[in-house]
Image (spheres, rainbow, N blue to C red):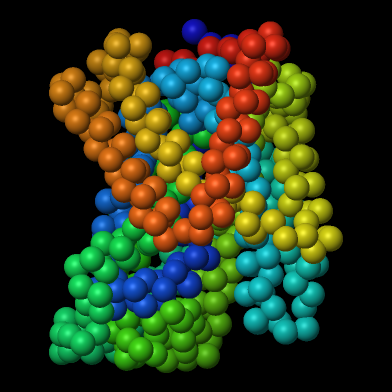
Length: 444
């Protein structure tokens, strides 16, 4: 059915769960929770649950896709099949730009590291941690997974410690009372959910590891759902502590470290910073390095980039050429103090638009792959499937409109220009004759 890329199919469900949890929990939870409290008060825990609802809707196409076949190019392959081959080039350009902020994870790690060791040089620390994870990923996906699982266990331990130690300090007698519970009413709770959606996204990228899983059809979709729900419950409980120990006006807009200093003694506070803050950035950086190359490997094999870029290392079966490209894109901005933190914003609105198109295009799946769909654990009647896809498109549209209304008109115009450029590239390259799309899915 498909041409063999050559990945090692070694990832188990346990590996995927560790990867997914580490992927979802980023350093953003340390700061985003405080901003969520600022927007909605102590009802922020409800906003986290609403955010999970949004996140799972975003993940539905990935959940359903991964339940029917092994997609070696991840969402790139799914997009090219159900939206159209000629638009795959636009997808890959938007994807590439959206991941350009990878060096910011290394910088975040360095900032927390400097808080613990004030004499350290943030630039050197950031370059060192980035180099470490690129080396780890070069030597194989199984090594990367072991490192990720170790870091994730420590990270989850830090969050659970924050919850367990913090709950006795929460003033539950007044927690659900106003003022302070709903600072901006029901609208504020939903707005908080839309904002905190960023904190619980990520698990849908598991489909990028489809080519390296032992049993992707069962393990990836179930892990996306379970890991997202697991993290959401943790974040919801965490936010109760974050908003209920000190007065709302003191913690609104503040990082979790403010509350952590109150509930922890010095050794436990140090563990929370090391395993929590450093662990969150480390797990995110490691797993980003791991998945970021997968769509690009398949896009290279299809002809959107030089085909040689799609080759894997003969021994470790890793995309060493694309890893080197991303290593340079990470290290050079760090070494030269170049600001790349706004590059991802160039495609922020396009990403939501892409989700809408993705859901509508995915309506074709049952007719294009009827036999595979019939065997899916999520198989459902056509009317239910169509309703689900339109609902996914509606949720993405809500997110697009919500963010656009609060955005600078300049950024919206830039997004439109970037989208036009990506479409032009896709059409020109496709009609040049250099693009020869492989069949990059197979039964698993």
